[in-house]
Length: 363
Image (cartoon, rainbow, N blue to C red; front, side, top):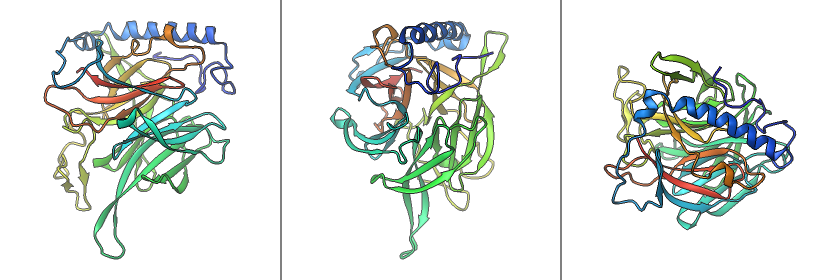
């Protein structure tokens, strides 16, 4: 089976232990062995072999260093006490949701000022274990003027409590709580697909649940799969974690602006005009972390097939991580304008990592 981690809890070795309490040497040996085994298999496929192109860096971006699958554009400080569960972008700021009981927070950072933390609020009650977050919006009708306005919100999941929270943006004031369920009964990652008014949700299983953004009810599920080798044998992929819906074809670095109105028509330069249009364009993907793997995978939002794996093992090499540092987790678009010939920009980090990284993916 396509297994990335041998333990079922969000914190490896034992669900009641934090990474610092677990045996660090055992965890590191286990994690790196599994990572190398998986990556060696992935990199043998024809699809990933072709992905190792040496596309020239764009002259318009300052590149600190380049790897096979990405250019590193910027490094910013990251609080090493933050057990990162999710990142999301809204209105020039990067929001971060963290986990662990008694330590879960929601934060707003300023990427123009070395990710300075502008706001930090604790999750309440404090026993809740925070998980993935996503910015989203819904169209509402102004009760007074009758005009349509966007209401921007942030949604946050919890690990095992089956409780979600919705906050106003940018104030981060709690608006409502809701209950939910998944295949495993856990919440892991979540991302918003604006033109479909849907959330995609991960829970550690091979499924991505699709929720209606207004009712928060499940509409359908897709199975995440990966095809190995020329024979095309397909395997289900578990432990999909943080999610970020992106569009590699937009000029605003993956931030989709399309919106379906009440008549089924697209506004704001949307991608569809009638019911016969595709649900997604070929450039629309879901980027995801795989728990205890230093990779990003690109998932087709309709079929669930992994079409691309980005190797990020060298962005913060395992052997350089101090004791207690956990795995890669956290993806957010940057909001920067995409220039011709340049790849998609995203911010990435990890649980308890000392830095966040702004990278440009190489297609």
